[in-house]
Length: 148
Ligand code: RB5
Image (cartoon, rainbow, N blue to C red; front, top):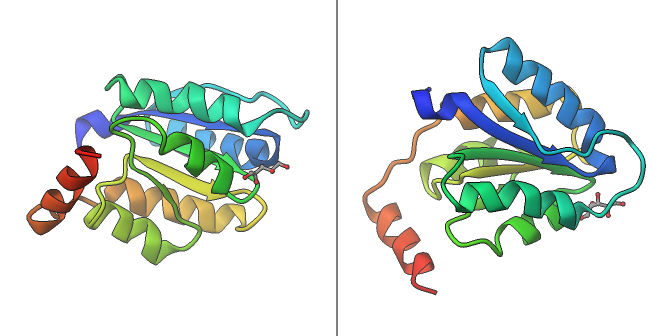
């Protein structure tokens, strides 16, 4: 893991709150610097608001990596990918989480708190943090995305 990946921003809605707290503990236990944008309970909120709170700072370059959790991961990934420079990957399986780093240089991992269990979520987080972007032809493809 590179040093800049030691700083991470996380967020969720109510449906992802419990998983976000578990992920936060996991990251803190690994001496990562964690910025939690909320939500702070299981009271119903709009995932949109928390996706915006997280994707904004990633888009601005304040954080190189972020993790979002909602019920399915779908809404959060839709919101986050509206932001320039954000490459949010909805990954509820290990292969997708790893490939989103190798081929897509994903900078936000999105998971569904109602789709997968906590232990799989932590495996995805760990693999996603440890996996590097392969660059080369994949970089060219990402540059085409940035021109949109
Ligand atoms: C909340 O009920 C749910 O819609 C939200 O967590 C998410 O799954 C949206 O995509």
